[in-house]
Image (cartoon, rainbow, N blue to C red; front, side, top):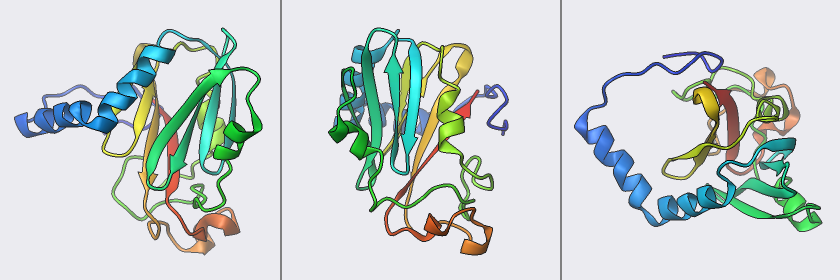
Length: 182
């Protein structure tokens, strides 16, 4: 597997994986995510901001998208600037766990510390070119194969608090992990 700062490796997918991907795209969540793509495709990221439960991309055309945890699902809102306080609050949900610590699960980048602000800032100057849909999350895609790779992780998936850079890693709810991949 390629590291998160390397180009993705191409390979052949088994038929079952292709069918699973098609089912995700066709699901109600997948259809809703596709509607988001229609709204933000081609927009260039001017600024970013983050919180413990989400991130915001502000675009050069004066619009924004906030991607945030809603229970165990990555959701979003869009609108014109300025970003209203209610949208900003979605990125700071205190019931979401803090995702900065390493994970004990078998997922890409699981052993790395997640600096959400650093990862999301890579999108500045990039235009949104696509969306990849998962069961409960989506990745925003950018030129040259880059993605804001988002994963929603259930509570209890973190290493001990001794390995976590913040005491908030033991937070109660699901966590949002985002990496700049590609």
